[in-house]
Image 1 (spheres, rainbow, N blue to C red):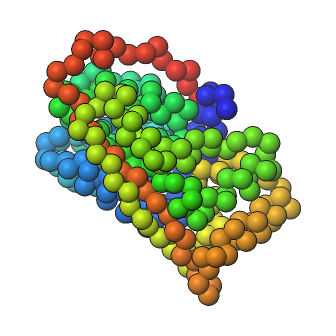
Image 2: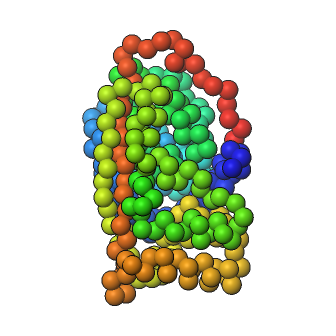
Length: 289
Ligand SMILES: C[S@@+](CC[C@H](N)C(=O)[O-])C[C@H]1O[C@@H](n2cnc3c(N)ncnc32)[C@H](O)[C@@H]1O
């Protein structure tokens, strides 16, 4: 997929998903976000960058961990996500948290500004995840830590049928790289290629629990990565896609509820204390969505 198109699909898709994202995904993503924060091991006073922060489900716990003497910058490509996070920060009176719309592959920050960078369930959506890792590396101080969480292997994610079901109806790939980073040791290798050392990777098995078929459908189609494509379906196309998806998750139905298996991969690495000057250079900016 053309990178600019992919950025646009992500930006406007997540704009649509923003309103229902927490309703459908907050509970389901909690194990990945907790694992990510544990991997980052934040301490009071740190300056933290949260890349692809969404509504702030990682940003706010990070802000609590670093305290008011620290600072957390949340960035995301989708304006509605950023607005939601900024509104919440204001409502909570948090002055050490900021939200800005920004492409993960082209961070508008100076080098070495942050002690820690985080990216919760975002890397799979970027056209060039390695470039975003290089950007995280650039903006971290030497000795700073980067931690990321992605979905694991397709064969371990019982809801993976959603992608072919939607793609069949839109003539293009919706999320070409979605499960790639969760394969074998790819994430670990990308961390090392970006320059990180002491790289550590963990896999977490999880279960996505839905109280009803409507919840399972809403999470898959409305609150997540296929929201833009889905918004353009007419009623008949929606009904067909729902029926195919419900069939694909039938093995995980428990009466009227669903327990769908999933897998997360959490990776962490450190920017070396001694690095070649070339590693600081910033690539020419990517054309934004
Ligand atoms: C599944 S949400 C994760 C949000 C949050 N980190 C969390 O854990 O709840 C994925 C986020 O990635 C963002 N995203 C997708 N492509 C992006 C890009 N190229 N640059 C920055 N953010 C991007 C989306 O807008 C969306 O908010």
